[in-house]
Length: 300
Ligand SMILES: Cc1cc2nc3c(=O)[nH]c(=O)nc-3n(C[C@H](O)[C@H](O)[C@H](O)COP(=O)(O)OP(=O)(O)OC[C@H]3O[C@@H](n4cnc5c(N)ncnc54)[C@H](O)[C@@H]3O)c2cc1C
Image (cartoon, rainbow, N blue to C red):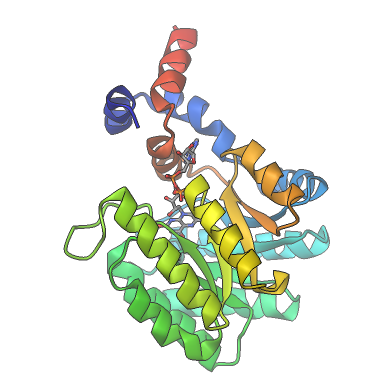
């Protein structure tokens, strides 16, 4: 990313929220569940599945997390009612992880049970490092209770990821592998782009070679090319992997991957709690400066 773009990316906290909202709208289906359903149907016509996420995280009140739970539960009903090729992505901090871990566990278990009854899959997103171990513990507890419609996310920037994979392998897990989006310290995370890439490639091989189901979540050409080459060379079955991308990011590349015959699923967030997600997305956009300045200019 150019110096100017990264300067604007770092200044986002002082950019007016209305500008952030305008520029980030491409990353979000809309404010309502109906928007997420509509976008999921549009994606299906283009050959992609979706994974629907209710925006909201780091919830600090029980009332709010019950609201998040209910909205998330209604996503499961909507997937079923509309026969969508979709599943659910959920953040444990939206379900009350910071309030009381057992309360959050009961919430996620109830969602996974409901989804299980309808044949719908649920993936727990991976948040920042204070939540890594507990998220993986929840996964293992749910699997031990016989719920197998559940998956996790692992971040290639975390130094612990290989060890985490090894601890999950006995479960034959479904793992979304991403680079990782949060700011973590050098002690626990790789910081250099090439180190992260090289660990991503290594982790992809550990997962595929050991029979895990892998969701290859990246927009990075280098990693996409590496994954497609490895999949071709090793004759990895289409059941064992799919690519995943975020709504509004690299749509041309997405279509190219679909045309090549690979499975593709798009992360479709919706809801009114859009700010944190939007800022993270904008910080990753190499053209962030142009978009933000254009939005400010047109607003003026
Ligand atoms: C489906 C999915 C789910 C995810 N779930 C999680 C999760 O649970 N936990 C977590 O920590 N992280 C998650 N992430 C985010 C991930 O960790 C990365 O931060 C993000 O994908 C960017 O990394 P990248 O591999 O695409 O590479 P990058 O190097 O960031 O991007 C590669 C190229 O893609 C383009 N690009 C990337 N982002 C944007 C953007 N916002 N706007 C425009 N162009 C862009 C640019 O051309 C860039 O050069 C998820 C990502 C995906 C795709």
